[in-house]
Length: 279
Image (cartoon, rainbow, N blue to C red; front, side):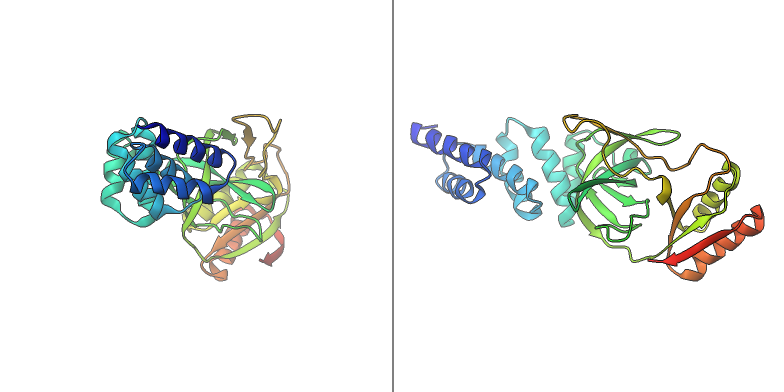
């Protein structure tokens, strides 16, 4: 690499660090066009476009950089994720194979999806469907960016751990929504009930494919110091106290399906629900 190209590369790095993307991109594209500075410009552009959620250019530059990159795992990570967003499944399979990621291993594993919404970080429970996609299983609060059942693209780089009553799950950053799921969302309060009665409602929802969440006991923001690199969150789905009242949310295709689940629960447990409302 000649000295002039090295100076331009360093200048581009300075612009990238200062978040001056326009000037950095102009220099890096110039170096690529003139075939100077080896693989670094393409690698840096791949990372830049990945951070900006621009999947087509991220995929293009990651593929260009991969053969000679000093960080093949990072480039394959970008390729696997960006190709998923672009629907290029052959490239997806090649990238995950290079990273020794088995697609079947990730299916049905639960995670927490971190989403930045209105100056707050929310974490929603989701079920993995591939190494970088998941289906939102929580019922987000009204006004949220996401809906229950949405298929989302996530970054495989873990941001920490979340805990519920029975397990710890990885927190993965939200990248993009791939498919929107339009469901009718209802909330209501349950009459104070035992844990077994409460879990009966969860079971009925699962059986009837109704999304279920506990809004009165949802921790959706980080706990502890802002300086924590890998913060821990408690996703308290089930309150451990007996005979507690819960504010719950249910989401389904039709109102009659949601009402049927609530009525079945009422008939089995002889407990009532009240303040039912549609959102």
